[in-house]
Length: 109
Length: 113
Image 1 (cartoon, one colour):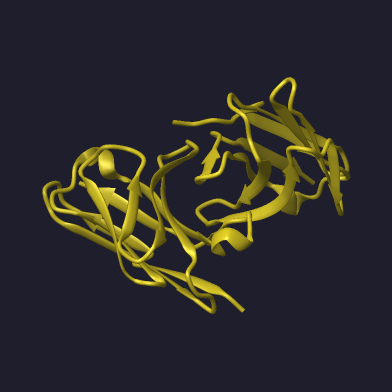
Image 2 (cartoon, one colour; image 1 turned 180 degrees about the horizontal axis):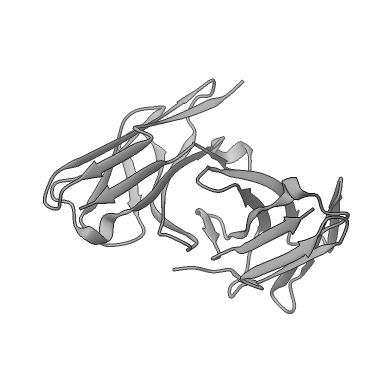
């Protein structure tokens, strides 16, 4: 069964704007990860945040985690056309990663 | 460096035919291995995972099976395909207890006709 649910399902923005995607989950986790998928390709790991962390940065990516609300957000700043892809959150409860349905991001130039 | 291979890249099979998808990992030993399926426009559904040779855990009851005959080889099989088996199949690995991130292969696009 799917653990994470991303919101929104689709997001369209202009280059230079920020993109925010949210993820909600149901059970306790060890960590939460965000992945990116270009159309028809495999997934690429972006960033991991552990259950005892509240915020993490990597380049233009910023991830927050609120374990009390069982939610996370991914912020991509100063978006580029190359950021166009689907983004998935995945929760790790110890056995295997459980993925949400993803947010499809379109960045137009 | 580690590399993950999947083949074939695309496959068109008739209903009722058998299936064999292969995944191999290079450059690491004793990885955890995973099979996921992604239906069109949907998220990833975990099908099987393996923590060692001959050790397979199934997450979803279906007409698919998995095997791990060698440390770095993971095979997804079916004796008789259904239309609902169509999708994008992704293999992934992670370095056992040593890591948290998963590394994905390029995927196999399966169309059952």
